[in-house]
Amino acid sequence: MKVKIAIVGGGLSGGLAALALKNEGMNSFVLIESASSFGGDHTWSFMDSDIPDSIASWMKPLVSFHWNSHQVNFPKFQRDLDLGYNTLRSKSLHKALLRSLDNNQFRLGKTPEIHKNQLRLDEEIIDFDILIDARGTGPNSLGPCGYQNFLGQDIHFDRPHGLKQPILMDATVEQKDGYRFIYTLPLDDHTLLIEDTRYSHSSFMDLNDYRDSIKCYAKKFGSTFKMEREEKAGLALPLTEQMFQHPGEFNHHITIGLKGGLFQPISGYSIPQAMLFAQLLSKSAHLKSTSLIDTLQHYKNSFKKQCRFFWTLNRMLFGAALPKERYIVFQHFYGLPIDTIMRFYRGELLTKDKVRILTGKPPVSIASAIKSLTTSHWMRPTKSQDMTL
Ligand SMILES: Cc1cc2nc3c(=O)[nH]c(=O)nc-3n(C[C@H](O)[C@H](O)[C@H](O)COP(=O)(O)OP(=O)(O)OC[C@H]3O[C@@H](n4cnc5c(N)ncnc54)[C@H](O)[C@@H]3O)c2cc1C
Image 1 (tube, rainbow, N blue to C red):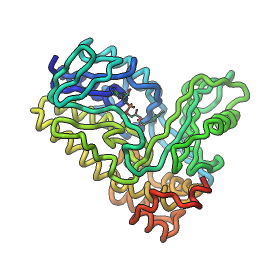
Image 2: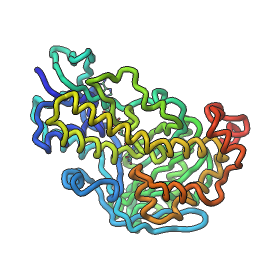
Image 3: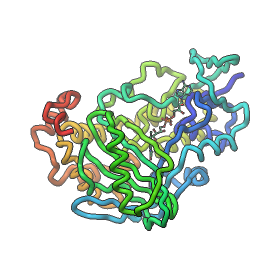
Image 4: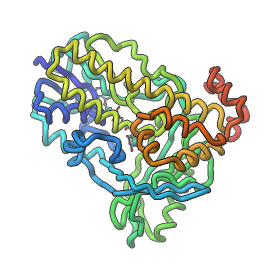
């Protein structure tokens, strides 16, 4: 079999790339996933403002939940944001792929060997012009990083919980393991997804502590409930551009998704970049292979330029701010105008946004800020930082 585009990894980024190609009427591709279903078991979310209307038209059917607004809670204020929020679950991506793709356009439960222009599966060889590597990643391949660790549970209450809109950050909870907040989505009248999230120096998670804190938080919404589902992750948040260095990437091979560094380096959200990449791929798929790769690389390079500011902020957050005072950085950010918040999540900040984010009194001494920016100090947490974790 011969295809123009081979996508290896049927998670978020690979799955959306395949859907966009199909949606555009481009049929010379194959999607290979090593697991028995596409997408794993995740809850992915994005703001209405993260994507243009042209993408919304093919993404909307995938969305499992939509809310017209959301809120954030900090020690100094609570804020309602008039900005729509969307969530999709892996099952929805899996079903959409099975519904849309022809049988010869995907393989499940296959881990191919990748050779120059060839995928070798058990009893099959697939030749391709372009390889899209969407295999996700482990934290170590991203270089120096901080971590966004979280554990989420779907909690079913015996009575309506009363929450009408998502609480994206409730940072009024005790600050521990770095910046900590609780993220709550009302999935239906009786069910909440409650997630305990911590911005830490290490990926270590005391799971019992996370579970106890979710149970305690759930009591705010009702006294009788049961846990129905659990997901957890330690997302590596990069501090430098090392995440973009892929020695295996050559002229007909491009790496996307988490592995390719196509995600917002502070929030860890990768769905907007996965959708934008998928859209670009599908609209450019008619190009000759060399021009197509150039176009896709150009997109990655532009995104990389945008990321420089976020990496710097991450270095200040993880290298200079004391763990228990990190919440002040986010509290300041959520006091900014809504257009700056929207551009932050999209990863498309303007100069005026950067100025807004950096002004104010940071919870950081000037000396430690400079150190964190100019040296590799932040790669080796000091004893005092270790002790506060
Ligand atoms: C629990 C959780 C919640 C998250 N929530 C959000 C969120 O709300 N919003 C957001 O934008 N981001 C979120 N993220 C971050 C990010 O969106 C996800 O990690 C996302 O799944 C990354 O997409 P990806 O395509 O790079 O990798 P993945 O979705 O992990 O996909 C990689 C796929 O490649 C497959 N694979 C690996 N090796 C091979 C191989 N050799 N051959 C074939 N297949 C292979 C894997 O089985 C997997 O299906 C979340 C992450 C987690 C873990």
